[in-house]
Amino acid sequence: MSGNIFGNIFKVSTFGESHGKALGGIIDGCPAGIEINLEKIQYELNRRRPGQSYIVSPRNELDKVIFLSGIFNGTTTGTSIGFIIYNKDYNPNDYKHIKDVYRPSHSDFTYDKKYGLRDYRGGGRSSARETVCRVIAGSIAKQIIKNVNITAYVSSIGNIILNKPYQELNLSEESIEKSIVRCPDPNTSKKMISKIKEIKNKGDTIGGIITCVIKNLPIGIGEPIFDKLHAELGKAMLSINAVKGFEYGSGFNGTKLTGSKHNDLFYKNGKTKTNFSGGIQGGISNGMDIYFRVAFKPVATIMQIQKTINKHGNIVDIKGKGRHDPCVLPRAIPIVESMAALVLVDYWMYSKLSKYSLIKKNIEK
Image (cartoon, rainbow, N blue to C red; front, side, top):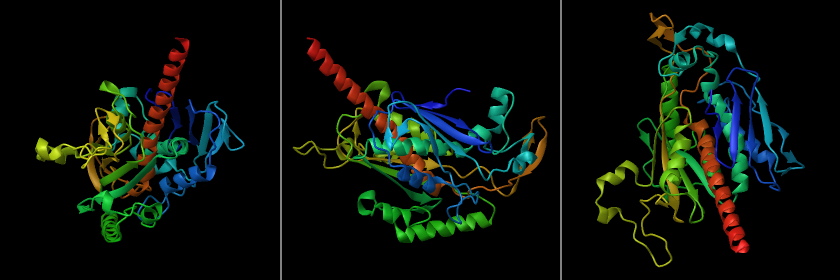
């Protein structure tokens, strides 16, 4: 299986399965001399871990990360950063009933057809538990580009929508984290929580949208043509389990406007009066806020009887078993932020190398 590496300079390679012994990864390309706050990494992991509230999976994983290399006395050494998280509360027996059955809207069927076998224990490698490694790498990336602020929040659950623009919201860490659904608007948060509880009681699941805002990113981050900043952000978000859509700036709503209404007119200082571009023009950051939205589907495993097929092609009944999220969005917030950070740190390092090459070329002249 390929596709386990993300990034070009700051590279993250991950391994592990949902109900295997452990998950882990290796980060290559991290600069030396970066002070790493291990408590911040654990804080981000705690935001993602199961069992943190009554509206998420009750699986009790503490997700304690152990660093094996690359960090010495709290500082990166420039060598590969190796890390591992041991699974503690795993139960493969919860999945024996799907050993020969393909769950609807899961990867069971495609994995089996592509590889000739599959790890049926919670989906194995295809499980969203893999994202624990992304959060570790993303937290380190955040600490490298610490002046850039990346904030994500839940902006809709089903038909419960937070219609206020992000500029009118209190996007402080305290405001978002005091809501178990991670919605910064108290009234909307209550409605979202009630909706999730209602859906959970029916043995069903529900999806929604996460909005992410990036502030203080310098002008000039991103590359034209094939490596546009928004294209890389889109790829990063679409690589997250359960993501079905990505839009930035005015997105699909921008198609309803005319050019005269949609154009972002400049002030003298290079700022724009509006920001329908979402902080990116020509694939390059323009100094304005970058904002985008990520759509998550309802979790595929539901506690209701459904029709499906087994590996022999026979129609059979299936019902979800084990511990699953009725809505994945509250736990996906740190994942969205981490993937954004991994994209940005890669571009940041590329810009540093480009400036070094230009200086070296001028010296050699």
